Length: 197
Image 1: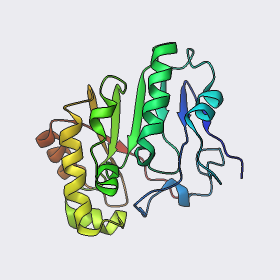
Image 2: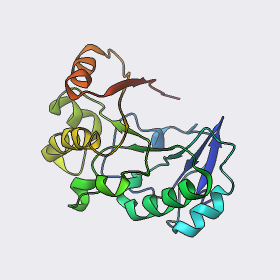
Image 3: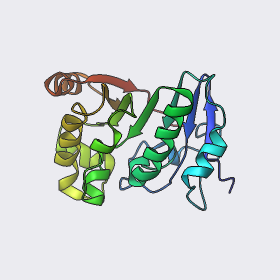
Image 4: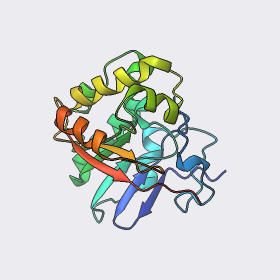
């Protein structure tokens, strides 16, 4: 395993800090042989210092994104430590890509620790109702997952300036229910392409 803790795509730097995830989504890029062009499987999880060393000078990047093959907020202390250091040294915009379930999995509030450090949070909504979410995401939290996700989305607006929810355009996808829900939640919606190769 390569243990890639930082990787770049175009003008963004991505930080890969865990492979752990409470979901097994049917469309997850982890199951896609092509992936993102990097081997992001880890045989160990990096420390704050190791992530910062892998990131290096980030001043040339448009933003730094916590996003790998796992749920970054399961290691929220590392996210906070790295984000704080990068903000202090470079003032770079910080985004987190999350499934929104780490607070429920860990049983503790995480969002207050992100205030002032994270500029954008992109949360995988994936479905406009609990039944479809369960069919697509197979969360280890079971029926508790979707209500926990919606709660996390609402709470995110209290701490993070820009909140985006995303859904994957699976076959026969109808975007309207997701658009309505995003409007009700008062957040932006991004529709991600479905990758099958």
